[in-house]
Length: 244
Image (cartoon, rainbow, N blue to C red; front, side, top):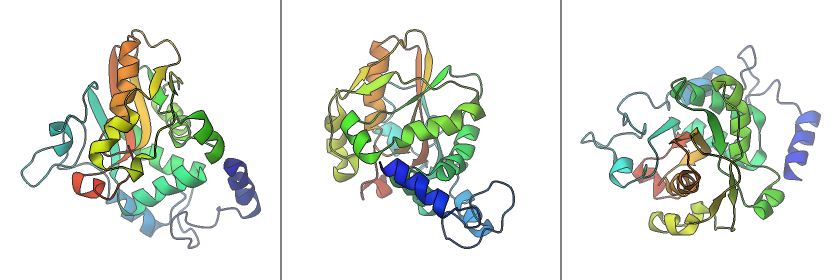
Protein backbone atom coordinates (compact mmCIF):
# COMPACT_ATOMS: atom_id res chain seq x y z
CA UNK A 1 0.00 0.00 0.00
CA UNK A 2 2.77 2.42 0.96
CA UNK A 3 4.63 1.56 -2.24
CA UNK A 4 1.50 2.33 -4.29
CA UNK A 5 1.05 5.67 -2.51
CA UNK A 6 4.67 6.57 -3.20
CA UNK A 7 4.21 5.81 -6.92
CA UNK A 8 1.03 7.91 -7.00
CA UNK A 9 2.81 10.77 -5.26
CA UNK A 10 5.63 10.66 -7.79
CA UNK A 11 3.11 10.73 -10.65
CA UNK A 12 1.26 13.73 -9.24
CA UNK A 13 4.34 15.59 -8.03
CA UNK A 14 7.26 14.46 -10.23
CA UNK A 15 10.77 14.83 -8.85
CA UNK A 16 12.19 15.53 -12.29
CA UNK A 17 13.02 19.16 -11.47
CA UNK A 18 14.04 18.70 -7.83
CA UNK A 19 17.07 17.37 -6.02
CA UNK A 20 16.02 14.25 -4.12
CA UNK A 21 17.82 15.34 -0.95
CA UNK A 22 17.58 19.13 -0.62
CA UNK A 23 14.55 19.82 -2.83
CA UNK A 24 16.26 22.59 -4.77
CA UNK A 25 15.68 22.76 -8.51
CA UNK A 26 17.97 20.19 -10.06
CA UNK A 27 20.96 21.73 -11.76
CA UNK A 28 22.60 18.46 -12.84
CA UNK A 29 21.86 17.06 -16.27
CA UNK A 30 21.03 13.53 -17.38
CA UNK A 31 19.28 11.15 -15.01
CA UNK A 32 21.04 12.30 -11.82
CA UNK A 33 18.56 12.77 -8.96
CA UNK A 34 20.91 15.03 -6.97
CA UNK A 35 22.00 18.61 -7.39
CA UNK A 36 25.77 19.23 -7.66
CA UNK A 37 26.10 20.25 -4.00
CA UNK A 38 24.36 17.13 -2.69
CA UNK A 39 26.27 14.94 -5.16
CA UNK A 40 29.53 16.40 -3.86
CA UNK A 41 28.42 15.75 -0.27
CA UNK A 42 27.58 12.15 -1.15
CA UNK A 43 30.91 11.59 -2.89
CA UNK A 44 32.78 12.78 0.19
CA UNK A 45 31.28 9.81 2.06
CA UNK A 46 32.63 7.19 -0.36
CA UNK A 47 34.62 4.41 1.31
CA UNK A 48 37.90 4.51 -0.59
CA UNK A 49 40.83 5.28 1.70
CA UNK A 50 41.72 4.08 5.18
CA UNK A 51 39.33 1.13 5.00
CA UNK A 52 39.71 -2.56 5.77
CA UNK A 53 40.74 -4.47 2.64
CA UNK A 54 38.50 -7.39 3.62
CA UNK A 55 35.24 -5.64 4.50
CA UNK A 56 35.68 -1.92 3.56
CA UNK A 57 34.91 -0.77 7.11
CA UNK A 58 36.68 2.48 8.04
CA UNK A 59 39.79 1.74 10.14
CA UNK A 60 40.27 3.24 13.59
CA UNK A 61 43.07 5.64 14.49
CA UNK A 62 45.40 2.68 15.01
CA UNK A 63 44.70 1.23 11.56
CA UNK A 64 42.55 -1.61 12.92
CA UNK A 65 39.15 -2.84 11.76
CA UNK A 66 36.72 -3.04 14.66
CA UNK A 67 34.17 -4.87 12.51
CA UNK A 68 36.49 -7.77 11.66
CA UNK A 69 37.91 -7.84 15.19
CA UNK A 70 34.37 -8.34 16.53
CA UNK A 71 33.71 -11.25 14.13
CA UNK A 72 31.51 -9.22 11.82
CA UNK A 73 32.33 -11.35 8.77
CA UNK A 74 31.95 -14.72 10.44
CA UNK A 75 30.65 -17.14 7.81
CA UNK A 76 31.37 -14.70 4.97
CA UNK A 77 34.48 -14.36 2.84
CA UNK A 78 34.34 -10.61 2.24
CA UNK A 79 32.24 -7.50 2.55
CA UNK A 80 31.64 -4.43 0.41
CA UNK A 81 30.02 -1.07 1.15
CA UNK A 82 29.84 2.16 -0.80
CA UNK A 83 29.42 4.92 1.79
CA UNK A 84 29.75 5.85 5.42
CA UNK A 85 26.32 5.92 7.06
CA UNK A 86 26.20 9.66 7.44
CA UNK A 87 24.78 12.78 5.83
CA UNK A 88 23.60 12.44 2.25
CA UNK A 89 24.20 8.67 2.18
CA UNK A 90 22.08 8.13 5.29
CA UNK A 91 19.31 10.32 3.86
CA UNK A 92 19.25 8.30 0.63
CA UNK A 93 18.97 5.09 2.67
CA UNK A 94 16.03 6.58 4.58
CA UNK A 95 14.36 7.56 1.28
CA UNK A 96 14.84 4.02 0.06
CA UNK A 97 13.83 2.24 3.25
CA UNK A 98 10.69 4.16 4.11
CA UNK A 99 9.57 5.64 0.77
CA UNK A 100 10.86 2.88 -1.56
CA UNK A 101 12.28 5.53 -3.86
CA UNK A 102 13.74 4.01 -7.03
CA UNK A 103 15.83 7.14 -7.64
CA UNK A 104 17.49 6.70 -4.24
CA UNK A 105 18.19 3.06 -5.08
CA UNK A 106 19.76 4.07 -8.39
CA UNK A 107 22.00 6.67 -6.73
CA UNK A 108 23.20 4.14 -4.16
CA UNK A 109 23.51 1.22 -6.58
CA UNK A 110 25.75 3.22 -8.92
CA UNK A 111 28.44 3.39 -6.23
CA UNK A 112 27.71 -0.06 -4.78
CA UNK A 113 28.33 -1.74 -8.13
CA UNK A 114 31.75 -0.10 -8.34
CA UNK A 115 32.77 -1.79 -5.07
CA UNK A 116 32.44 -5.36 -6.32
CA UNK A 117 35.13 -6.92 -8.56
CA UNK A 118 33.58 -8.58 -11.59
CA UNK A 119 33.52 -12.35 -11.86
CA UNK A 120 33.53 -13.15 -8.14
CA UNK A 121 29.83 -13.96 -7.71
CA UNK A 122 27.05 -15.82 -9.48
CA UNK A 123 23.98 -14.05 -8.10
CA UNK A 124 22.59 -11.40 -5.75
CA UNK A 125 20.50 -12.46 -2.74
CA UNK A 126 18.36 -9.78 -1.03
CA UNK A 127 17.90 -9.94 2.73
CA UNK A 128 14.19 -10.76 3.10
CA UNK A 129 11.62 -9.11 5.32
CA UNK A 130 9.03 -11.14 7.18
CA UNK A 131 5.90 -11.45 5.04
CA UNK A 132 3.76 -9.53 7.53
CA UNK A 133 6.23 -6.64 7.75
CA UNK A 134 6.61 -6.49 3.99
CA UNK A 135 2.83 -6.29 3.57
CA UNK A 136 2.73 -3.45 6.10
CA UNK A 137 5.62 -1.55 4.56
CA UNK A 138 4.67 -2.26 0.97
CA UNK A 139 8.17 -3.20 -0.19
CA UNK A 140 11.62 -4.49 0.67
CA UNK A 141 14.54 -2.08 0.30
CA UNK A 142 17.02 -4.92 -0.28
CA UNK A 143 15.03 -6.20 -3.26
CA UNK A 144 14.83 -2.69 -4.72
CA UNK A 145 18.60 -2.36 -4.43
CA UNK A 146 19.06 -5.74 -6.09
CA UNK A 147 16.90 -4.68 -9.05
CA UNK A 148 19.09 -1.59 -9.48
CA UNK A 149 22.32 -3.57 -9.07
CA UNK A 150 21.49 -6.52 -11.31
CA UNK A 151 22.04 -4.84 -14.72
CA UNK A 152 25.10 -3.00 -13.44
CA UNK A 153 26.81 -6.13 -12.17
CA UNK A 154 25.38 -8.52 -14.77
CA UNK A 155 24.10 -10.81 -12.01
CA UNK A 156 20.64 -12.34 -11.54
CA UNK A 157 18.62 -11.78 -8.37
CA UNK A 158 17.78 -15.00 -6.53
CA UNK A 159 15.31 -14.92 -3.63
CA UNK A 160 16.97 -17.84 -1.86
CA UNK A 161 16.05 -16.81 1.67
CA UNK A 162 12.84 -16.46 3.62
CA UNK A 163 12.39 -14.95 7.07
CA UNK A 164 10.70 -17.69 9.07
CA UNK A 165 9.98 -15.67 12.16
CA UNK A 166 9.23 -12.03 12.74
CA UNK A 167 12.01 -10.18 14.55
CA UNK A 168 12.25 -6.84 16.26
CA UNK A 169 13.63 -3.89 14.32
CA UNK A 170 17.42 -4.05 14.65
CA UNK A 171 17.51 -0.26 15.11
CA UNK A 172 15.69 -0.64 18.43
CA UNK A 173 18.28 -3.03 19.90
CA UNK A 174 21.66 -2.68 21.54
CA UNK A 175 24.60 -4.08 19.56
CA UNK A 176 24.87 -7.14 21.79
CA UNK A 177 21.21 -8.06 21.28
CA UNK A 178 21.16 -7.91 17.49
CA UNK A 179 22.64 -11.32 16.79
CA UNK A 180 20.22 -13.00 19.23
CA UNK A 181 17.34 -11.16 17.56
CA UNK A 182 18.03 -12.64 14.10
CA UNK A 183 19.57 -15.98 15.09
CA UNK A 184 17.68 -18.70 13.22
CA UNK A 185 15.35 -16.15 11.62
CA UNK A 186 16.21 -17.15 8.04
CA UNK A 187 15.62 -20.34 6.11
CA UNK A 188 16.65 -21.52 2.66
CA UNK A 189 13.97 -21.02 -0.01
CA UNK A 190 15.83 -22.21 -3.09
CA UNK A 191 18.85 -24.09 -4.43
CA UNK A 192 22.14 -22.56 -3.25
CA UNK A 193 24.49 -25.52 -3.65
CA UNK A 194 27.77 -24.62 -5.33
CA UNK A 195 26.87 -20.96 -5.90
CA UNK A 196 28.90 -17.87 -5.09
CA UNK A 197 26.32 -15.54 -3.54
CA UNK A 198 26.42 -11.85 -2.69
CA UNK A 199 23.93 -10.93 0.05
CA UNK A 200 22.52 -7.41 -0.41
CA UNK A 201 21.13 -5.05 2.24
CA UNK A 202 20.88 -1.31 2.83
CA UNK A 203 23.05 -0.82 5.95
CA UNK A 204 25.71 -2.84 7.74
CA UNK A 205 26.42 -2.16 11.40
CA UNK A 206 27.26 -5.23 13.48
CA UNK A 207 26.86 -7.72 10.63
CA UNK A 208 24.35 -9.76 12.66
CA UNK A 209 21.78 -10.01 9.86
CA UNK A 210 24.42 -10.88 7.26
CA UNK A 211 25.83 -13.65 9.47
CA UNK A 212 22.37 -15.11 10.08
CA UNK A 213 21.68 -15.09 6.32
CA UNK A 214 25.08 -16.63 5.62
CA UNK A 215 24.40 -19.47 8.04
CA UNK A 216 21.24 -20.48 6.18
CA UNK A 217 22.95 -20.24 2.78
CA UNK A 218 25.98 -22.20 3.99
CA UNK A 219 23.74 -24.98 5.22
CA UNK A 220 22.29 -25.04 1.71
CA UNK A 221 25.73 -25.67 0.23
CA UNK A 222 26.69 -22.20 -1.03
CA UNK A 223 30.34 -22.17 -2.15
CA UNK A 224 31.17 -18.54 -1.36
CA UNK A 225 29.36 -15.76 0.49
CA UNK A 226 29.84 -12.01 0.64
CA UNK A 227 27.83 -9.03 1.85
CA UNK A 228 27.20 -5.81 -0.10
CA UNK A 229 25.49 -2.82 1.50
CA UNK A 230 24.89 0.78 0.51
CA UNK A 231 26.41 2.10 3.74
CA UNK A 232 28.56 0.92 6.61
CA UNK A 233 28.50 2.37 10.10
CA UNK A 234 31.64 2.58 12.17
CA UNK A 235 31.36 1.51 15.80
CA UNK A 236 30.82 5.01 17.16
CA UNK A 237 27.95 5.58 14.70
CA UNK A 238 26.42 2.20 15.53
CA UNK A 239 25.83 3.22 19.15
CA UNK A 240 22.86 5.27 18.01
CA UNK A 241 21.22 2.28 16.35
CA UNK A 242 21.15 2.06 12.59
CA UNK A 243 20.30 -1.31 11.18
CA UNK A 244 21.54 -4.87 10.86
